[in-house]
Length: 289
Ligand SMILES: Nc1ncnc2c1ncn2[C@@H]1O[C@H](COP(=O)(O)OP(=O)(O)O)[C@@H](O)[C@H]1O
Ligand SMILES: [Mg+2]
Image (cartoon, rainbow, N blue to C red):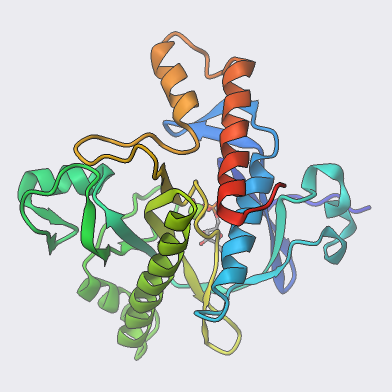
């Protein structure tokens, strides 16, 4: 068996080159406050990968996506080892469009901070008197640049996203920008409406798209996972305060309450976190892992 090395190792995910395809592996690592903790959250990677698969299947008639297979028998032998089972996705290699397609249905995080200052989020004026975590009258599309390594992503207006894409794909900027916006809003609305019927609020999310070999716009990356989105429990949702994070709340609370920690969680907190991920998956998909 040939030993393979990832071409990219992120905080949580590892990416392997496989010719025309990529293999994306979601590990069991967990990061809180941008630090990778010492614990492994068993099955977390599988939950993330299977959740993306669930959404890719559900939305494939809205836009084609890059998923080829989550069956390890379709992958090189290296991926038929136990540590890759369930958490690996073979994906069509795309030419990525360098825009992070963010959709916000609720006002929170950096959006809330900006609204408090001047009533806008990413240059979009919102109605007066919104409370923290309030549902927006309509979901808004707030793209950002996908920064090169070392740079920070930067929010841009829709018009700037046209220019930004036009520079890289001459003659195509307006077409791609409009497609990304319209697809992102449709995907968010469809999936957020579905999730709400299962007791989960998808407050906001980020999509990434690319071009396939025919120049068609295809949905890539991960889709509507707790790592790319904010999921809140619908039960107990109340505007006027910040909402508990669906997946990492126990971990964050414990880390805050134990400031002298060395980024290692007690097993009891890890177990509660695992439980959260599994429950979230079950609520959304109706299936056990
Ligand atoms: N189908 C694809 N083809 C090529 N690149 C992809 C595809 N899907 C996602 N990507 C890219 O793979 C990378 C995934 O890396 P990730 O671990 O999320 O780190 P980061 O988002 O910080 O770059 C991103 O740069 C993303 O744009
Ligand atoms: Mg990423």
